[in-house]
Image (cartoon, rainbow, N blue to C red; front, side):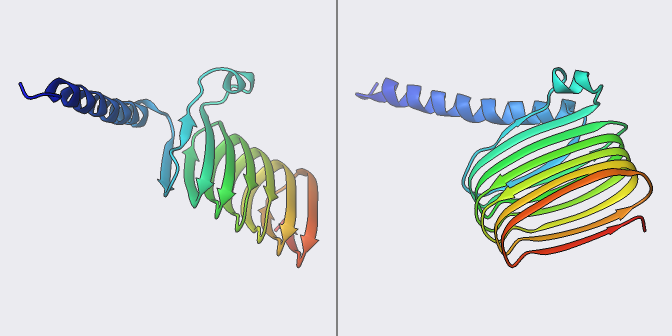
Length: 193
């Protein structure tokens, strides 16, 4: 055997095992998870966990997504369709983008974005909806459409060029908490259509 051959073989084997381990877990995650999620990222690996305990049991949730993204150009697309769902998302970096769709009853969505050029677009359809969105950075934007009953909202935008557009269709909105701090702010909330 050539000198250093065992060393190169060990490095190759270790790299191959890490590669296979990453994709085996990904395949198992996609096969056995009870939600649909699309993720497109550029520079950073993502931490994504489906929890079947803790917060999920506290609210008897069927689908729970907890995602943390750090780095630049983070993009996350979530789709949840079931009776009960929870999405807790944190994006820290530049150019964070989040698109979320939830359909069903007992929905909770909590979003925290810190960085430049943040964007959230969500569509929530069902009953007993709780939406909490917090954006800190420059040029923040939020577009949210909510259809259903028994809803509550908490929205915070801090930075420059903030915008909030929310269309709320249905009855029984239990409350809004909207806070914007910065320059060039626009707020459009249509409720009870």
